[in-house]
Image 1: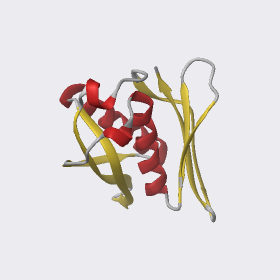
Image 2 (image 1 turned 120 degrees about the horizontal axis):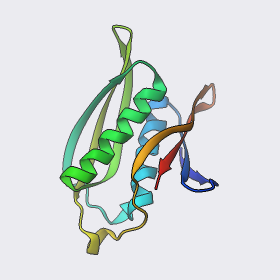
Image 3 (image 1 turned 90 degrees about the vertical axis):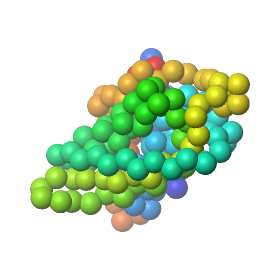
Image 4 (image 1 turned 180 degrees about the horizontal axis):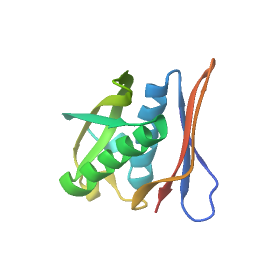
Length: 140
């Protein structure tokens, strides 16, 4: 369970994996924030709920990560803990996430690479008996 960064010519490619697809999505979010700053320095004092829905898992992953990136950009929240559950409802794929963090402080959390956007480029969603894996590219 976890994530790793893969080689990419210009941007950041992430592969996240877990026992379930929800866990893989959780690690995908952790990896995205780790690109931006040191998540080990974030105190998980505030909890927020994130609800997203989409037509398929690729779009759900995109929506989940984009919503978190939006909250970082607009609300300046640095998140470090992520729990995501996926379910189907009325032909749509839905997800509910719980994230924990605190207001971003550059002096405390540091600054690494600015993530401009999540992309569909080279996105993959893989499910097998041994677990779930997602790959995606972050535009930096």
